[in-house]
Image 1 (cartoon, one colour):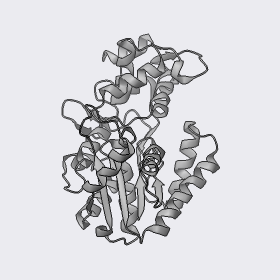
Image 2 (cartoon, rainbow, N blue to C red):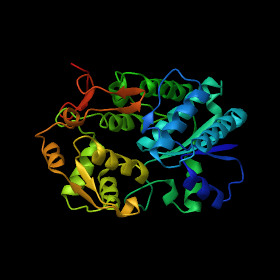
Image 3 (spheres, one colour):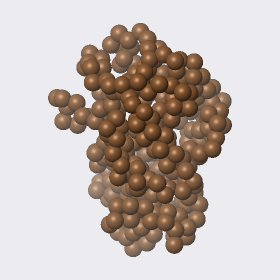
Image 4 (spheres, rainbow, N blue to C red):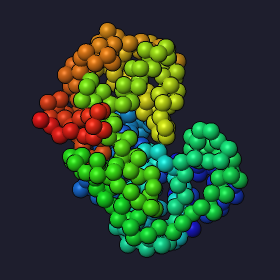
Length: 322
């Protein structure tokens, strides 16, 4: 059996629990950067490696590319074996599930040979943060909840991946409203994804708005802001590297909304609101009007403030360009 999980922490926990079968960590932050439709697996790996290297989590683009290629080759090589997926309910994991299942469908894998463990809560934990939070024995016990997937699950994953990678986000709202017995957290994840589009009222994504609010509330370092933002999420999905990248972007745009200190580590760098940041947070000015936009969300490349899709906070849906 091939075990696929969301990253190295959960993979290590499974090994600690005694799993000796192959374990494949699915390493990619798909909610960050370009994930355009119409590319081969090799081409997409190249796009993702280039982005991840620019983001700075690992500087060596070729090393990242090799890691993604080994991951993809492993999936193709072992796709004929029974597969057990270990994932969580948050946006980070749900996008990974979509990519894995979409690829398994293209590899003509029988859905009944794929079982899924996907959890959003756990007994005894008031706040479930992820599989890596569990002791090895508790993690392994989740295997009892695994159920074989159905063709409907593959259908939902294929539709979700197509909606996420499309050049326009026209189908995201329908995915957010949809339900899937096999993928019960998918609609909620798409609802969260839509909130990462610029807001109608201020041009801020929900994450950007929470970062500014954290600083206003007294968070004084990048590390404190990251923890404050995570506490606001029902299902935390944003890693520190991704959150720090958003803060850096807000501090280096043409009209900065934040100022950052010069400490050696990002965790310790001081953070302050600028007057422009306070104006945007208060809704007096628009972030996109001030600073423009050049951002990928899945397959959508936002480049023009005048034609960018935005999230309407009152209607809780995306609005097309006017």
